[in-house]
Image (cartoon, rainbow, N blue to C red; front, side, top):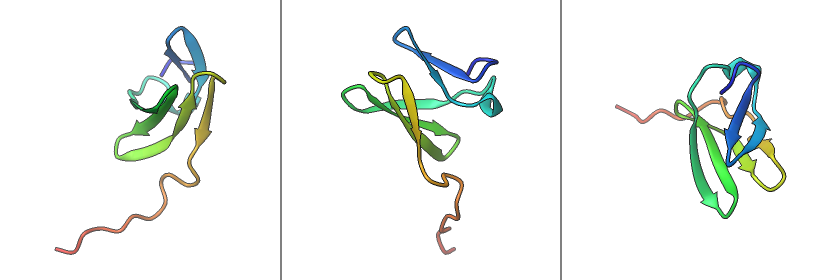
Length: 69
């Protein structure tokens, strides 16, 4: 993520967040032109390359169930 909070993919600039400036994100294509964006173990949202937008997932840092030990 750039200092101004953007991700550049296929010569397109998508605004993500300045909070993530300097961080590495995981990006995986899940459909034609649709990419899942993850940070650490959290899925943040989907990038639509055609529209150059990030559609965020509601509360990606919400409670998670831990496996019982």
